[in-house]
Image (cartoon, rainbow, N blue to C red; front, top):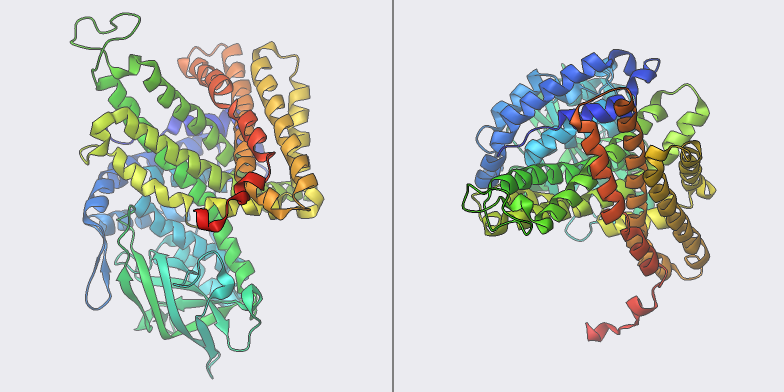
Length: 595
């Protein structure tokens, strides 16, 4: 079974739930009529299913190869697929026309990104990192830097990376040692080693633009003394074309559990030529623009791998004959029934489907707020949207990757012994998905960021605004009998999340360990509440279609999955609340030598 992009699901969210056709007065949306969006999704689906998906297993088996000169060759077919992607204009979907893009909304671009990541996660990381580099230069670069680099990064003609991690530091970037020394011509000389650099060296783009964190001599200690530099693989000549080879090289490729098709490199900077982005010692805030965008992208990766794995498991469950249904044969003319008849197989598939459909809506709903933050004329709407983006980024990154990996694991379980072999695709989905819980800040770090920073930002304005929005939705629809189960479930989850939030306010300040000990359960409680809100929105949209006379079973089936979520997934909120309220005492009580 090969991956089939869920275009119908995307259209339902964009058209019926988010109603993007009502936003035609905003930048980007005027050119994103529903007809245009549907055409884009259809063509995206063809490219991802027909070009990228067949290369997924190829990339896994062949991996990338480093030559003695440090050059890296990507798996067979990747270079040709990359050229097709660039020629088709896919990397530039959401880029402003000013820099050669099509200027479409971020939420529409996200639909393509999900499809490409499901089809081939390792491949899609190359343009994904490039767009992150584009965003960082857009946020902090000079006009000259923007004109030189952004059009080529936007098109995918040039690739991009982020050079953060070093052998002695990952999360704690204040420990970096890579140094930057000023040169007489206004450039800098960068020296040091960076590790785990995704897309760090490859043969698909004509140039690779590294964004490098380094420390200028005499800079303040810790994160306050970090600067950001543009370090091209080939130094642009007077015409802006790749010229002389810079002294930056791939010193090695990592042997990884998954994403074999992506070149994860050790990058050596040997007095490589670079240019400062923004101000000295102010590099980290600019890099965080890139990192925050990547964190939403990583949440999308967890969802995307879960979708691909779910599709494979559902197809297997329909075809695999094993045993008989407890209520009597469902395939009486065959030797056994398909395993889809067994309740425990159904449990795993329904768990996956319920989380995936709401998780996608949650991701798209948040992405739409990104569009509102950049383009809405009302300052209050922009502020609220920015608040939501800050608050929800760690939730989406961590929750969707945790659940995405669980979905991949359940898909392997549905396959039984077949899933543990390489004859079926689910083992690759599981291996590829696992990194999403680690990079761009581990999920534990995301949970700490949520409870330690995002909740308290602006006096708790973002979370209180979200609570008020949920309350307003519930109040507006409390008399709608068709929505009653969804409103009841959402209201209960929101009340538990609010109780957990107040508990953190009361207990976290006096004992930071209590807040940290509660953080992961709090994040999962938050994620479940967000999914409950999305199911209420989707149920409202589906009911409206049915009430209008729509007979397509898609909408009735949507409600069936939603009711399953309410009964079998959402009750986990109570367990998360109970656990987080125990604090840190038992968690921290065991002496270190007892481990």
